Image (cartoon, rainbow, N blue to C red; front, side, top):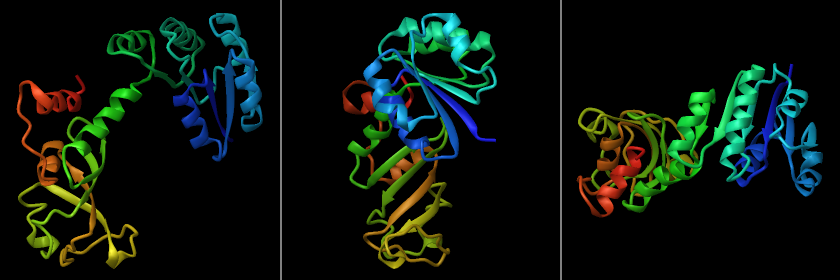
Length: 238
């Protein structure tokens, strides 16, 4: 049986989600109050409705209680996301994803039953800030408080060395998941301990945030004012 998802409010954020999942084997229900939005997207979803979701009866009529998940983002209308989340919780929806404007907004959403509160702006900042501060970090994805996944251009300190003698695992406590470069035709491939790092290699790495940033030649983060203090606050989710 196909998974069923509902999107309430088509913002730039939920539009990206819809574009990601529309090609999958699933049924998408779209609800928005703007007729032009529904007209533009109705052929790309299984069902679509022009509706005012502030009405609890409307939510109960349009959203099946056994739906797999609902994604809520009515734009900057904070009160609407709170009320809709409450309605969905009372309806018995299994998974409720809601975009939050602020930390306070997110706390309220958690209290009333949101399963996943999403902060797109903060998450984007968490990924971008480390990249701005180092020449070797290409992409950066925090997975948890203790674990990050990142693409790192091989620093000069490891170029010409074998993986097993580079100290990446024993000293830096990091894992090289895969490598892409000229030897791998620019595709990611697993490597052996005897692999010798080349200048243009890109390493897909996993490990502790602090260790990975140090390996990426990032300046030591210090508490206090200035860009380093600001960056540390971002990465700690403050």
